[in-house]
Length: 268
Image (cartoon, rainbow, N blue to C red; front, side, top):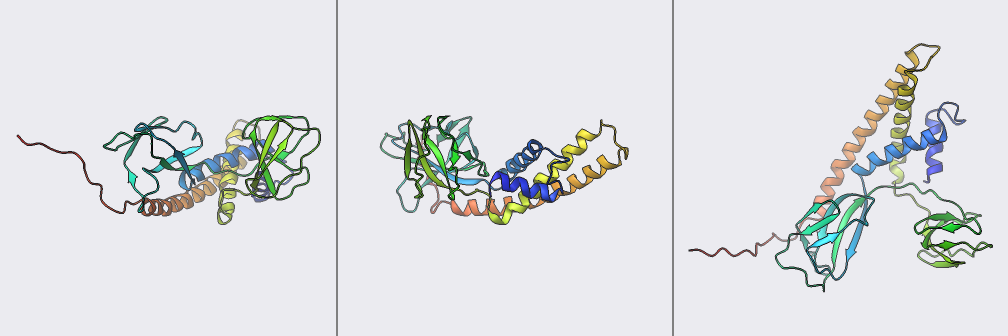
């Protein structure tokens, strides 16, 4: 589901399809807030490889959308996998290994990142596109395209590939084909919509307190109650999903054998 479809779902839930009460920006802001809370309970699983590791420290500043670091595998390629202890301070991961990495092995960081709803505009001719921007073909074909080489688009639309990871040159820009999918599981789309509707109701009630209303404070209070009930239900489900996810993570990254200390204590 993309952002527009989620917005439509929330507006139908609020009976505000014509945006008489909430603007598009207000609905999008509520969706973003619900999406952030959802991500902390059920983040998207991702991995980051640091090749030729020559230090115990790993710079993870490029993982700007991370929510949590789950585990670090070092070195990769072993079976069973060898997960090592680590600590995190800001954008630096420090591996707690006895021997300093010699620059020949790879460390793989498993982390959870923020969920996303697909949002992309149609391709435009003769336009400067930055690295990481997304576009859709003027006539949608079920795929979206990420700008993997920044540049200016051509005067004519390119022939879009429909094979995942395939690239196409567009004047000085280069696009890479991706599936038009959302990281939100289909089974949880209505849960996200419920949370967004709750935040929208609560926000409306907060803003209406200082406004003159025909019904006095009855209407804002009713909206506040409705919003609070939805937010409470949303967070209850998130708590349940979070517990399930934590159990799964503990099983997924559980070492196959106990950690053996390499410290040697020399007696008197």
